[in-house]
Image (tube, rainbow, N blue to C red; front, side, top):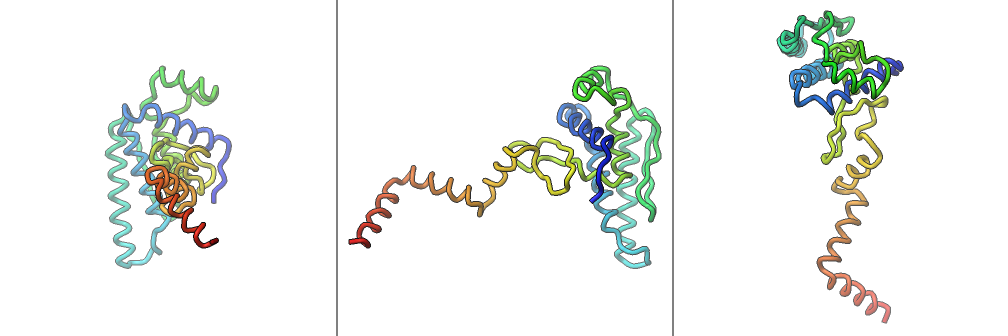
Length: 204
């Protein structure tokens, strides 16, 4: 697992913060992130560079994703792009459309550094080239779904509270079994009395 530099961690946190606040108004940025994450996942499982059906299918999917990312980036003031080779995924870009002064002020309050240089598209492309774009993910608690930047690939929720909620929702978790048992006894108290009566009869 690739370790993150302090700058990568900070910029990833800023990106997650931006997505949680402004994704509805910037859907194209969410689409760029999704496409870059698909490209990253595809690239990490690429077949050997031999002329095989698997390699040809991989290359077709790769070209499709790169083309989609290029089309999305055309919506910005300066066209950006990505290049893929056996050496890795690299970016070809210049500064994209800057975020508004209002967003810069919010980010400045959040981190006090990096507000002038932060650009969500730039960060997504840099993270893709560094192989860490998969660290931006959504909390797996269905009642939360907050965007987070993770330092460990094992982390799937934004907090301990959400981790517990996700655990409770698992079909075979002990917490879920106990909750169902309490609900059953609350809704059908006679079941509890019958169980107690059977235990008493066994003792007699």
